[in-house]
Amino acid sequence: MVDEQPGADPLLPPDARLDRLEERVAEARRKEETRAGKGPPADTNEQTGQRVLSYLLGGLLGGALLGWLFDGWFGTGHVGLVVGVVLGTIGGFWSIIRLSLRK
Image (tube, rainbow, N blue to C red; front, side):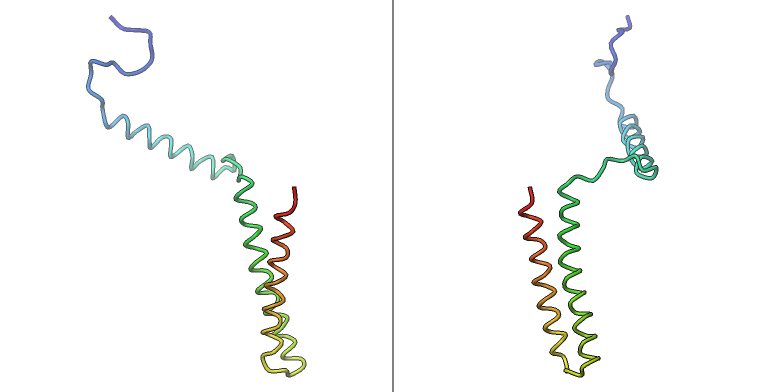
């Protein structure tokens, strides 16, 4: 007699092909949701991590660029580059500290 309960029949052996098919269907759905922009939104930890990385890289690269430009304009050797990198790094860390103090 057939049960009205969903699920597998306990008397039959499990079929690995069906399990693999279910995994492939679930993976295809996840890929389609991601492609269509309906995937899970990024959590706040991920967004904060990306913001911290941008502060670090932005400060470092921005300071290096400005220092390099000052060296070219004023002919100071590499002093402006070093000062720019140090100040950019300090600015990046300062921005991260301010971000961490927000509620």
